[in-house]
Image 1 (cartoon, rainbow, N blue to C red):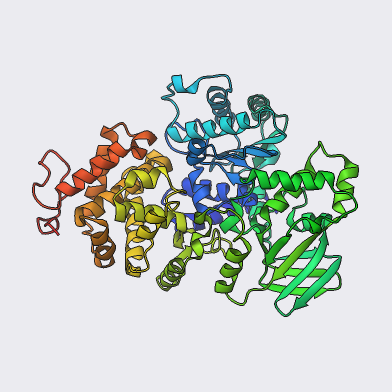
Image 2 (tube, rainbow, N blue to C red):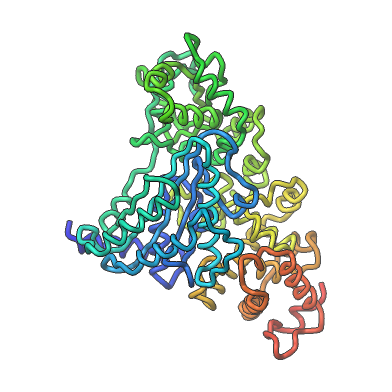
Length: 590
């Protein structure tokens, strides 16, 4: 194919993405396309992919950045809670993405990225004493995560990989020598900062982007077993060589395929270090005994199971139990500190594998709960299986939305991003709309449902299902307004403001959680007033400093709550303030 053919295909794909996302700026759609394709091997959720976006003013020419530790993407909450396994080997991936909707690769963007790395990725600097006004808070927080991850590897077995992706719709066969030279210098300095020799820059042209988009989704995988213990129409139990289960769970490069691990519990990999140490010790000391004598094995669910001799063809398999076992075995079998003789010895040992073909989603959820009942998996990892989430999923589907109570369940079916509502997005929206806590919604997106009391308040089965739908629609309309009134300020700004704006709107109409939970079901927000309300919250946010810290602070949360309460009845804001009252009737006391 000619270069023009790939360029035309990329343009069509980008325009389709812009239409799906409701974006007028095709360059923003291009960034979304590139980020999703590059991060596909990590099987991140749509929330996690979007959280990595740093694009906007003062981004240091870095459009997105991700720090992955043992298959888990780190977030701001990870830094606050020190969420990195305390013991055991670490696999750290640092991914930096620069995407330009241009016809060629240019040197200046790489020079800027190089300067950003120099400024923000030094393990010897005290960043608490340095103020970088030339970089936005999003890019600064991503490099803080990178420093935290690298420092966590001190004195431990660790592999650190750094990848810089530079994507354009041009051809990577004609990258100018000066661009290549700057890229080489950037990688050398990035590798030095991250204390690794495994650093690389990858130039993605239109052809490579199309190739990535055509990578097949995993649907059927072959599992070779040695001995079948039992089977019936919907279940199998067999002994599989450890080499066999590792081959089943790994790609051609030997990396674990994270999409094969059930998303509800996958994020718990590696956090129970005592268990991991016990498994690792078993592998180190195993003699003539078989591994399955000492280990409960793993459980897989699959949509279909087709036995063929000593192989089982599994359609859409997911490993739902035994995640720690597989993670530790993989670490052992890929460790440079383990001899080839020891790896060969362990590879021939067998592990017990159970394969179940669930007859329904309810059965599938029951299997996950039952097989993990003896592990210390925190409640949030299993929340999506509660009945209330099934009810929301069914109700949303009737309204053209797909509620992902399981991570990536609809993204993997290639549903449009604009129609997918994640459990995290729903939780954040409810914290803002029902609890009036915009700061908590912004600052704790993945731990909002840790607390049983908060969780029951947010996801009560007594609430009308229309409430959940109305809250999500309002949140997304606010996001659209923010995009239109402040287009240059980027995703970080919108994420800082949207939850406070939603809390403000809810606080104007409702005086407590019970009132909001019932009232949202029938609420009709005045279309002329809503943009004025959003603009008012933006002004307050900027007046307070307009930073991530402001967005997450209890003080700003209280300021917005007080402003909303004042509008439930007169007085209306003075004329010099934004006129956020469409009519006196709209703001009458509930």
